[in-house]
Image (tube, rainbow, N blue to C red; front, top):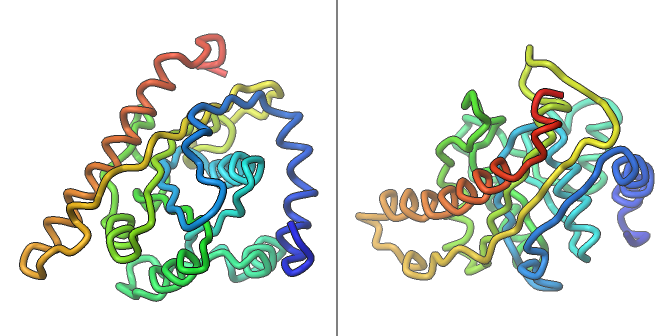
Length: 229
């Protein structure tokens, strides 16, 4: 993890062995993850375990993720110190501020891997399918030219899912992640101002469509023995 970011190294070495042993991981499409250069990872969001799951996959494949996450996580306690120390990117939800996207652009300009959840919160759909995405992912991609990798995750919603729903920490649970090929947004790279909002919506729908197809695929193949556990 490097000496310049001790908090990143601490989180990595403290949590990686636990996660690796406790769950049964399955990764698909890893060949799509570039070894270097700027990349935007866009994922569905089913559980509070998602960021750690994504981070584990990316770090195993040589990429250090920079997550866009709600500012509340940066404020207090050990989580806040870890988020700040690992240089994650705070988002002021509902404020209309562009600071988070500006920080993400700087990270991409430095050749980093930026992770964004286009839904901006845990899915509220009863079947955990992805909701409509916010347009930030398309704006970030078209303003930087960085490729967008869609990622689907399935399994952790039964571990730490939505408030009030059953949770299970039973060891051995399968957690599956699938990486798709980059979503082509090249035709939206220079949208005219008059149609920019519509163009960004179309781009976001492409990204969410790719994620949704992979989520449906993982869900159809997920071990039935674990569906109610």
